[in-house]
Image 1 (cartoon, one colour):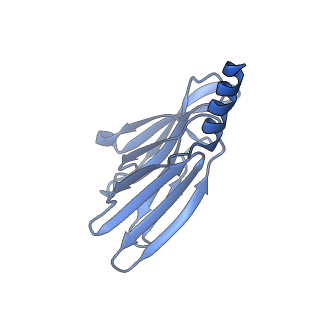
Image 2: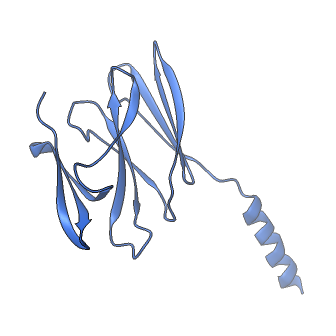
Amino acid sequence: MRFKYLAISMLGLLWTAPVFAEATTFNPTKNVEATLVLEGFMLTVAVKSDAHNESRTIAFQAENELHVQIDDFNFDGEKDFAVWQIDDGMGTYTIHRIFVYRPEARIFKELTPACGDDFVSLRVEHDKRTLLSTYWEMNEPKLCVTHFSPD
C-alpha cells in the first residue's frame, strides 16, 4: 500500500515539474544579438540591435526532439540557424528547417531547398558554397544541390 502512495506522489511531481526551455544566443552580424528559445515544439526568435527589436514564435510539427544548429547556411558571412530533428518514421534521416539572417530587414527568413520540400540529411559544403540534401522522385532518393554563388 505504501508503494502505491509513493508511486502516485512521484507521478504528481513529474506532472508538475517545469519544462525547461533551451536558449541559444549568438551574433548573426556585428552589433546584432539573436536569442533562440526552444521550448518543446515552439521556437521563439528574438533579434536585438541598437535600432531594432523583434520577436516571433515558430511552431514545429514534430514528434522527436528538436535541436538548434548555428552556421552560415547561405555563405554570406552572417550567422544563420537551423532547427533539425530525426524523422518521425524509422529515425533514418535528419530533417532541417533553415533560417538565414537578412541584415537589410534585420530578420531571419526561412530558406527552401532548390528541389524537394525539406532539407533531408543535410550536408553543408562551405568550400563549394553548397547545401546538399535528399529528396524523393517516384519513391527514389535523389541528390538536391542548393548552390549559392559568390557575391
